[in-house]
Length: 485
Image (cartoon, rainbow, N blue to C red; front, side, top):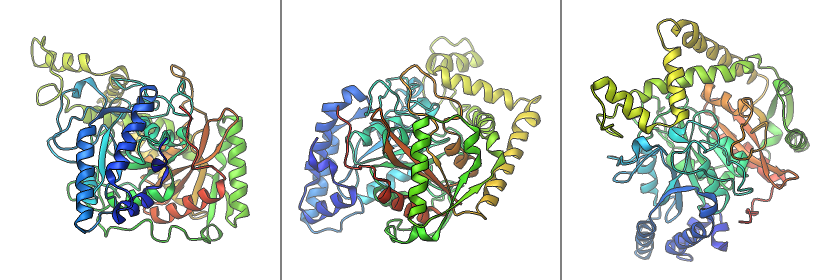
């Protein structure tokens, strides 16, 4: 692996802007690494080396002229395949959108272009982001770089594997129920989901609108903070995007005394679920490290955690049913050639092009939204969701951040099933609209990495980065270790 790919993004950017390293060199190193390992991992659905090198050359010419350097000038990035880039295909890993060409740029793409980032390719995902293993892609299964017989997690598994294996310095993903933070934990990298409304979702193919957020996968916390500083901020085109000045999340991130000033809450409900023995052991050691550094550890009680799985399934599937209703085979996407009438056209277009997981969620979502079930299922779920949010907010009166393992189980082999409870503590952040970040913690005896998860109160993202960065310093996890492929 080329040493240039081990340099952190902030340092790469400084070297590019000073002329010490050319962007073309970095991009060539990325594609060399991709050619070496992606046949085993299958992280990318689409690559355009010629276009990427052209972007990099434009950056190098810009540097020569002395023009102002963007925040990510010349830095390669992977983009999850549910984010629009004008003039390029966006499939959301579905046969339904196989020939779809994006008519405009997503808000985050506009900001990345303005910052000078170089787009390397489209990363694989579960179809329409519906899944937790990246096995539900219509095109290929992505492998975990640390053990190619095991899943990388999902739905942002392609982005996680690409970063973990060193193919790109960082990548964008989307997070609906842990879809960034769970694969980050499985792949030994940082995965960050922002507070709901911090980053615009304009130009992103929706899964469940009250959960979805665009987020970041990177090798370390500082790089995640840097990328977030670029893509966060208000956008009138996303109705839930909150107004406010753009924040530099890297500012003050190295606060050396931050752990001495905070209370870390450990949910007592961790004991209610089966957890892999080594994850439990590593998590206990992580709690001890935080305490030794001066953090106050407090047990918190959020009884409504027991409803997280049911709440997520009911509300998410209801929103899936509503959002996928626009996929009718008429205006865009796959259109059946054998429809006898309008309704038959709708049915056959979907039946021919959508995968099992998508169909399953549409059917269940339609069921809970039906006239006989709406108040009994969907309406009741929204009431209990409010109960969960209130209990979490009450817990923040006793602590500043909630700390848990990122997952309760190590990644399984292809074809095996994760437990339903595996992601429960990261999913809670989506239900409550709160920021969460997964940070690598340690390696277990099998050589696989495991991660821990910090969840903050809404819009505590800046301090969340400080806490995560502080833990990264004391964790003992070797950030410079890459999987052997």
